[in-house]
Amino acid sequence: MKYDFDTPVNRKNTASLKWDVKEGELPMWVADMDFKTSPEIARALFERVSHGVFGYSVIPSEWYEAYISWWRKKHGFTMEKEWLDFCTGVIPAISSAVRKLTTPAEKVVIQTPVYNIFFNSILNNGRQVLENPLKYENGEYDMDFKDLEKKLSDPQTTLMILCNPHNPVGKIWDKATLAKVGELCQRYHVTLISDEIHCDITEPGKEYTPFASASDICKKISVTCIAPTKAFNIAGLQSAAICTPNEAIRNRIRRSINTDEVAEPNAFAICAAICAFTQGGEWLCELNRYISENRQIVGEFIKKELDALHLIPSQATYLLWVDCSNVTDDVSGMLEFIRNKTGLYLSDGKQFGGNGSLFFRMNIACPKITLYDGLQRLKIGITEYINIK
Image (tube, rainbow, N blue to C red; front, side, top):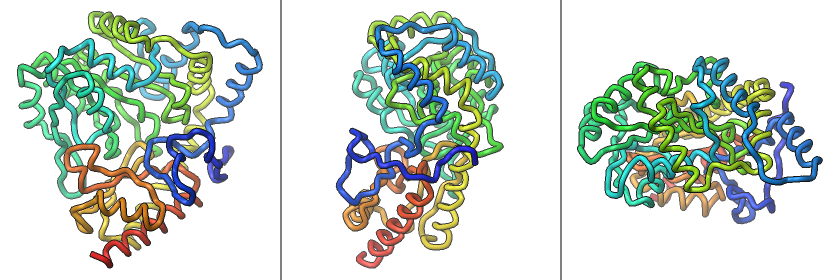
């Protein structure tokens, strides 16, 4: 490989949310990679720093061109410049959209288990969460369209938040599935927000479908949130984009993010995004191959050493979703035991809703030496937990 993903980076004492843990603990929870960003991005940031002046920034034409070119070439979807708006992050965009596209006490559909902050974006704004649980059959997840239609047809439902690809189950929704979701939303006058922040972390040979590209209906009724931050490990730079083809919806989104003061970039958010989408392709391909190898390592380890667990097949993200129902019905207690016993810190599936209380989520975006350490800790923790039950 041209790029180095094997050398561990010491992130202790760097004010890292992920690594602000006790000595000896190994955090494999929050969606934050332990790899340095691409050297191309680092160089662009160094050059920006060397200028020495960090005043107010505007959005240059190169920013729009970078997004448009990347989505056209890599994802087969052509966006127009006027559809795009800068935002400081996907979650600020979603929370702002919830406030502007709904009114208090209205219902917002989410497909659980799903990224837990969706709950916050809804509940913190005085709206109601309406869960459309994914179907879990034969160890895999799919959409439950019968239940989805029931939830969308509720007169109090005005918005749906889609996770595409899905976090935490690692599912890439196909074009037909997305088109069907769009048809149902249009039928019941529901606007859809698609969180596509994980779209560039996919298995080699697998490609995601942007929701807005699935059909003309999907394009008309949707707001899409995208960013380079997950794929290039630059979340701390607070850089994202909102794509809204529908002019009427777009005007409301623009009013919302400006009112909420989340539409202005910091001095580094723009140059990092431009560099990611114009110079980061080769680095990203190697990253995806490395993460794919890590997925295989975990799958083989669980099958051989921890066959009571079931790893959900994953096509996207660097987050693995693991079924613990054959081990315990108290996953929260088990994870607390594992952390206390081994120092391994995993995400409790309970926070993701749906049937998540029987699962944990594991972040595998780390050097292989770290991954092997985590797997050995997991084996020790699970084995000792089973022995004391």
